[in-house]
Image 1 (tube, rainbow, N blue to C red):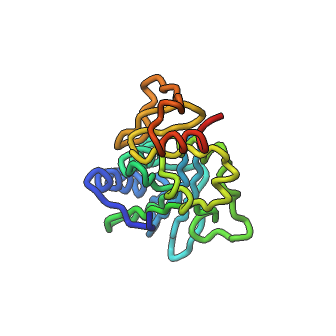
Image 2 (image 1 turned 90 degrees about the horizontal axis):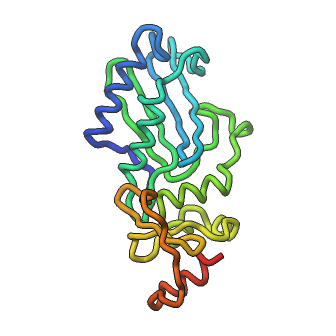
Image 3 (image 1 turned 60 degrees about the horizontal axis):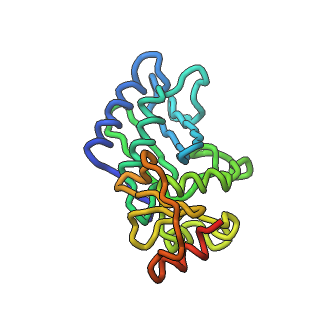
Length: 215
């Protein structure tokens, strides 16, 4: 997945709601020329940094003001789910650009942006997400092992030991001898996981189950 400006009617509607609130009186961007929010989104953890331009000078937000969670954080979680592609995954980092008069936009990245905002000092960058956070995200938004290797590298695959990756059929995710269905929006946790019997798996699926997903 390549870095991309993502757009769709529901994204445009969300941006319009966010813009209207952000530049309203007493809100985070009131009187500002531009607001940029950088959000790292994993299924069980997230972090966000905000850059605000006032009178041509960039700085952080006033800590007494913030985005309402339903307008940004919860909305971006839904955007992640809507943008999920079975086997390919979904985006990890979003940058939201907001202006008082012009249309806003979202840029999406398939990697973690570790600097603290657009102008953060690389020397003070965050640490990458934990292995547990990556595992949970892969279980929720599975990728094929090939896509996962390309995105994270072989070392990351080895460190995770049992990555949550889709089967080649892309409609299930297997981990620790269990199997759940995968829909267009990610893994379906509403059903009981199937217990995998490797002896009943056909051909290549049995090998994958034996090598990657057995405890």
